[in-house]
Each structure stands twice: as structure tokens, then as C-alpha cells.
Image (cartoon, rainbow, N blue to C red; front, side, top):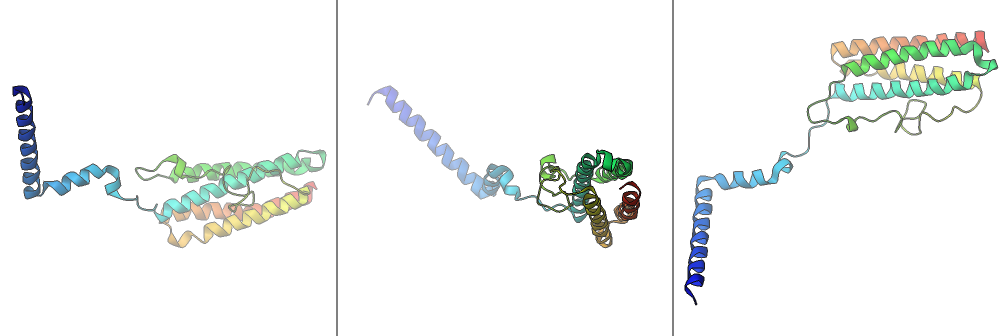
Length: 200
């Protein structure tokens, strides 16, 4: 074995001994578990906690408003005929109130740190036109205009009942907003019914 090879072997032996000594010191000082934990990175933190109940309630309410708005847009298209011209103004009036509801609800939604906008579903992806998960809300409304208006009345009443059913578990300020929106949606029912009688 040449001199250079012997020197290389000696150097490798030195490095190896140093590595063993360093690792032994880390174990003795208790630093090794910390090093191993640090190597795991984000996985060591586990899964994030589920969102708070008020966040879930807000997301659900926002989704319901988006669904109702999609349903109203479909009914406006159906009513944009000579036969339905008498109720278009009434429908658009209620539609504008839902736009205001949606803006108020979204202004209260403060996502926790680390959440992403993609965690919040949009009305175009999951809810049905009736306000429940399932079909696409933007689908054309089938049937006659009177039937579509009756379905809107039912959707308004269901939305109001759903919001009222959540009041007992919400913070006071959010419960007040939900109650206000629920009262407005309940008032839409007789308004739409009267408009249908006048315009159809």
C-alpha cells in the first residue's frame, strides 16, 4: 500500500472516530431526539385541528346564499319572457338582498392561520339549486314559472329555518347576523307569493 493510500485510510478512520464521538455526545446530552424530530419537519406537527363551529356555520351559510343566488339567476332567465315579465322586478329585488346577505356573511369569515381559500367550497362546485349538497346550482330551472317560484319560496323558508336552528351555538354577534338574515329570508316567502299572484 502506498503512502497516499495509507494517509487516506488514516483520514477516513479519523473522520469515522469523530462521527462516533459526536453522535455519542448527542445521545448523552439528549440532543438526538430533538435532531430526529427536526428532521421530520411538518409531519411532526400532525394534522391541523378542525375549524371552529362558528367558522363551519359561516361557511355553510355563505354556501347556502351562493346557492340561492344561483337559483334566483336561473329563475330570472326563466321569467325573462312576456309571460313572466310581471315578476322579474320582484325576483331581482330579492336577489339583490341575497347579494347583501352574502357580503355581510363573507365579511365575518376570518380563516384561521394556515388555511387556504381552496378549503372553502364554492356554490358552483357542490350545492344543488335547492340549497342542499348535490346537483349543480347553475343548472337550468325546469318546469313552469309558477313551479319555479314555489320552489324559491320553499328554499327561502328552508334557509331561514336552517339559520334559526344554529342560533343557540353561535357567538352573540354572529347569532344576531344569522337571525337578521333568517328574518329577511322568511319575509321573502310571502313577498314572492304576492308577486306571483300579481304578475302571473
